[in-house]
Length: 332
Ligand SMILES: Nc1nc2c(c(=O)[nH]1)N[C@H]1C(S)=C(S)[C@@H](COP(=O)(O)O)O[C@H]1N2
Ligand SMILES: [Mo]
Image (cartoon, rainbow, N blue to C red):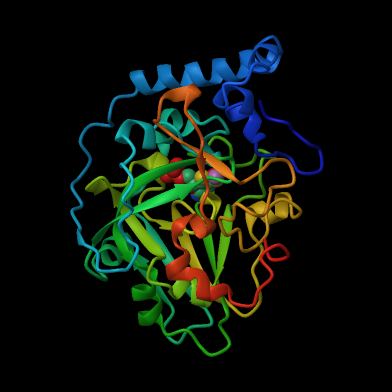
């Protein structure tokens, strides 16, 4: 159930509405919860996604995009890879609707060719890349990353792409460039929710330059050895595995180098809930729910046990030093 607020337009659903704590803890008050309307709503939404997943077959075989094994430390999660079916039917892509099954149903209208990505701002070599040229800029690698959504669920996905740093090095950021902003497509003609008050479109995100340069930050063109399905952010998206999923902007059209911390879509929508950093952190609660645990999508449906959320989503060894001396409670 979504709780619209006049001020914020839209709020992420509470994690309790995704999997009520009573259900995954097997508590007796589950019965009480079942008696409320919320139970029906959650079950209905879960059932509709299951039906959706059964109905929406793999979108044909997409073009192969094989990647070599990555040499980047931490690039291969040991966890079991999420089923393709789950990774492509349980999505957040608000331009195509706010229900998890909407993107798989609606994103076929997205036109991914021709596509250009404009790199601009404080760089010596600003450039407009045709997607074909961007694809060939550096060898494609396969990386199996955990993706942890701020709502309390996670997946493990074999992405294909290369480190964003490969692109950044080629455009030569100037000394004054401290942040990178990502602007994604906002096309009313093909994206039914652009123009709605859900978010301030286009969906934008940002990283500090050193975060953007970190080898784990991936510019992704594919997953599961094929090009990205539209609902997962075709033709090019970001994957920042130690941050909440919303930092991983889909269908990028502009990369802008700037001096000041850029505004981001979720920060504009609800600043007290979504900070600029948004590092996965089990010790910093979301104002409306705990971030201490998560449900892995595909693990036994609604009654899955939760697993503990790890600091920086388990990538602390790789990225911890980026935040040395920073108060992570203040810089949430
Ligand atoms: N353009 C755009 N990018 C987006 C979003 C969105 O709504 N629009 N949702 C974000 C959120 S909240 C998450 S959790 C991830 C989900 O990626 P996935 O569907 O590939 O798992 O995409 C992120 N990127
Ligand atoms: Mo998310």
